[in-house]
Image (cartoon, rainbow, N blue to C red; front, side):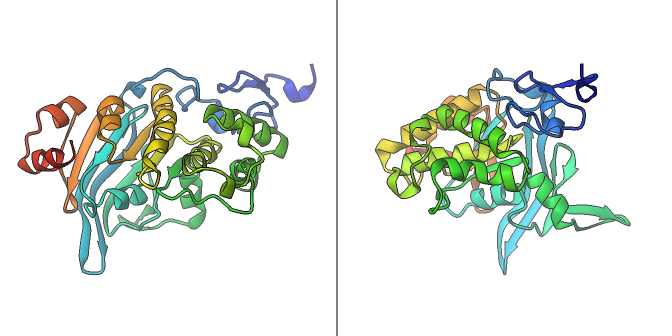
Length: 304
């Protein structure tokens, strides 16, 4: 056995051996610090509650745009492997909360932790100061974000969109990334569209490419911001199917949606927001069948 494979490490994503000096699995492209940990999200893992380990914790989050307070005193806990769905009327703060979780929006007060690590800030002499861009980017790279609009690069094919970030952000080899990207495109039902440009894809197909692109970074957490709201009704189902599959496989997900059927079927925990605060939260059965707050009942009565 060559020295490079003496006491080799095994990739927990695909099982292949990883040479000691390598940072990434040459078979599936998973970074070693991710692939070596069994609790990392795997694309074929069964649904699990993550043994109660917190993936996201938000404490007393406040966010303002000028004089307008869009989040006020938000507390949030998301366990590993859990699917949390956030519902509520437009303008209630749902999208802003998602954007604060991965620090696309800076919070004005409170703290957000990803697996126990502050995102966006660090403690210095007993107070919070903004973290370095490098540290923020490192944590953000572990969080996939699927937007309302697909935001695909129009000058790149579906495959090129998927491989761009792993190559240039994670510095993985093109060959390994391309192989994994084809697996992901197959996963979302688009392997035959790998070499097609976005303008020749339907809205549902573009959104599925966007999901594959997010998964290509081997995220531990996926955020979905009304991923079906920009789609024609007949295309919504194909995107929800992929999201259901991810939930079944144990991906930790925070989903903002107006698709109440999806929320009832897939969510482990449902949060109803209105006017910058969490009004009510609980199991899908509690929220949809027996809501306690009058505002929740009024909202659901208008859309169900």
